[in-house]
Image (cartoon, rainbow, N blue to C red; front, side):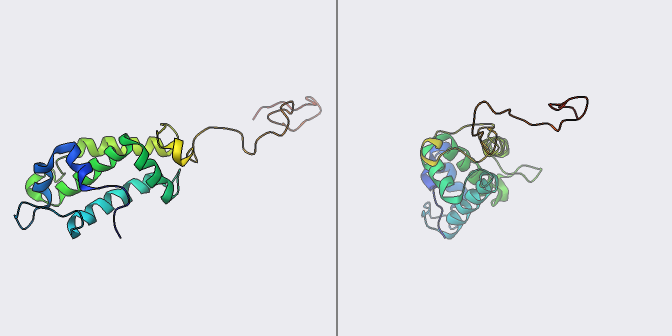
Length: 165
């Protein structure tokens, strides 16, 4: 299985090719292939991590559509990949065992959490549609605008319902 939307170029755009090379060049030949096992695994793992948030609001195909149409979405996904890549090389980790991009990783998780819950919006919605948690409309929608929004059970003291708890 190959990554659906993340590429090495997305990682290069954030931290440069030399820095990315440090994380993936295990054989020290100063090159990395897009399809190398390690690179592909990291990119897929980052996409799966993003999906663990975004499946609340979109299906897998729509997540890819959103990613390909929103540079902020793709950038946050790339920070997650960079964090995972830095964690696989202990020399780039901190004394606490976290990778080099922990702050960006946490910011990306917050972004995806809020986006999946409808607290943020994305440019990708123009192509993928609104997320499942966006809107806040009454479901099912009212058929007649004159109908009361809520119907409370009446009693002898309040014939139209009291509306209390």
